[in-house]
Image: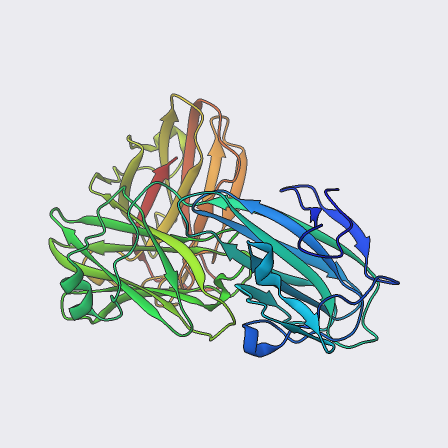
Length: 402
């Protein structure tokens, strides 16, 4: 510990990755923040101050766990920004972030260091009412933005995105931040027809339940859209594209209480492999190669219930594979929920490593291996989940090794 935690002049140290435990019980009341300071309201309960040093361009995800109504207010150095307690109320304080979304003491928020050097922040743990105090756990995780340009504002519409002159190039992420209710648009120039893979990532992906990612054509009509529904999901969108101009929209669908930093990346898959029939078993599997490719085929209505593809890894790699719409929008498709796909990853011995049915868009399958596969031979097995009647299934699978 660096200090007593009674003031910003004597804070305790909060290290990244190592939770600390403490209590505000029986501690003095040295802070009583007001909303006019950009802070969340706190009362005359005890409080404790922690110091957190965030590297240039870094984002810290701060989390509290308690059984009482915790209020977290964040002040950026110098210490004078913490203000002084005058007449029972903090005066002269300036908060850069604050968290008080729940009453159970489980708060999570982001602190973004947009400066070019390491910056110091003071985290004040307080109570919403005078009776709210007790034990708590406080932790901080550090996330660093990837190397790449920063978004050019304003870019909330297609016209504004064109005016910035900024282009999202495959393999070069752009770092952005969404304000309250904001949308960011980026232009993408596609030189060769293929499959465009778009990813929107954040810091721990925690605040991304309110993010919608859309692919728009040159007239701003929606080509495809994805909106997550879980607190652990970043956004992944895969769609077939022709040569021309497109836009990716990253939009905030809920107001929230703080900016959401993120980065968006594009990958264009131009390699395409067609199945070679028969490929119903591992002994007949169609071969595909390359770290990024697309394999296309079709399942039948009375025969050809399964298609199998074989590939080889020369070094450890994580595998992503997602079933997408077939060429020219042929029907039926899992994306339109007219049927359900099943995609399986098999070992060289034909043993199932993982399987998915509806993890992608609509009723399409999506595999994303969190653990790298070792060098060797593997299979992807494609089939349709059915009840009584088969309807045939033209499909493509976008595969990525990373």
